[in-house]
Length: 225
View 1 (tube, rainbow, N blue to C red):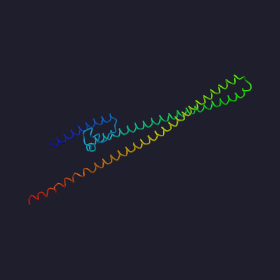
View 2 (view 1 turned 30 degrees about the vertical axis):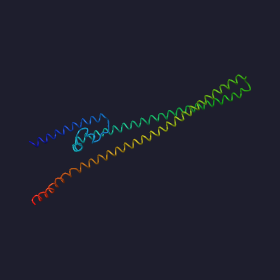
View 3 (view 1 turned 135 degrees about the horizontal axis):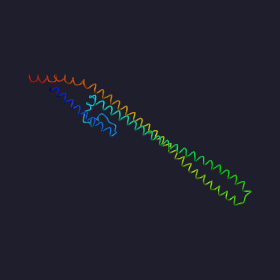
View 4 (view 1 turned 60 degrees about the vertical axis):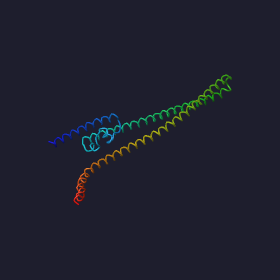
């Protein structure tokens, strides 16, 4: 009867630990962090050994860690794609605006050339007022060309800034991918070392029990002497 009671008590303790583990895992999932085995054990008020030795607890912890890892990788990937898409769109817009400005400058230069030719032709065959009007229009067009040239330089500077930011974003994405790979390798090595510890631990206890009688023999001899 005492053995049955002990087994029942042990099952009750295991159920209570599993219930606390479920509560802790639910809290960690709501917090959207990167849970570890030690953090889960501390939150559930259970030992790390229980999480590894109990099959139900081990399965729940592994499922939670795997889900958190995939969610974190997905969030990181989405952030990388969003940053890259933003800077790529800015660079494309700057290039399109630059092409439009260059086309307009070319059109205005052609127009100035035509007007200059007309001015030279009219200089001998039209009154002075018409020549003055053409000269005024020519001056206006020159000012327009200067304005377009300034806009062209400004757009060129914006394009260079967008390209520089895109290169920085690409480098940042590569650094974050390397960090994710390092975290995966670290998690794999931690799991391997934990499994090796579980395999070695049961063989240590019998050796300690066998060494106990050897330490008590000298004390008996000393008492008899």
